[in-house]
Image 1 (cartoon, rainbow, N blue to C red):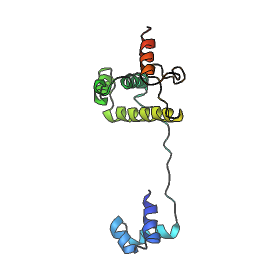
Image 2 (cartoon, helix red, strand yellow):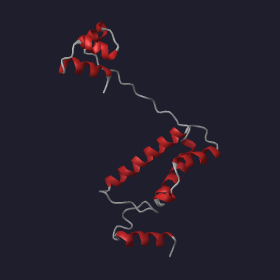
Image 3 (cartoon, rainbow, N blue to C red):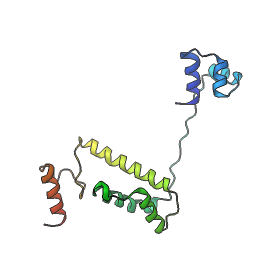
Image 4 (tube, one colour):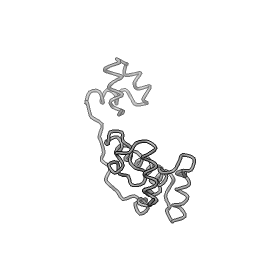
Length: 150
């Protein structure tokens, strides 16, 4: 919630005195009166689309993340380990950028699963329709054997 909307809520809905709002916010009483009198809206800034330093490595990192989803929880590599591997490849930006990329990647993957009505995607081919007739253990066993060509 924006700063101006908090001031308006305190003054108009909760009936808080301007002096109390000034004490809590650190603004002068005249400034608070001006904000309430004008009814100004907080500016919303659009951030331009900029290329990321991670873009050259995005495909590789996506492939690594997909490979990690196929493994059991204890066999998975952490994001710190993946960041260390990217540093070895010449990636020179912080761990936070890699973690943010992974968060967005997971959210996109989960949104696709939700759009399919909760159906899980095949771990190897990312195709729900291909193995839709199979269920449970049969489905995973069939996917494993079809992946290895048996």
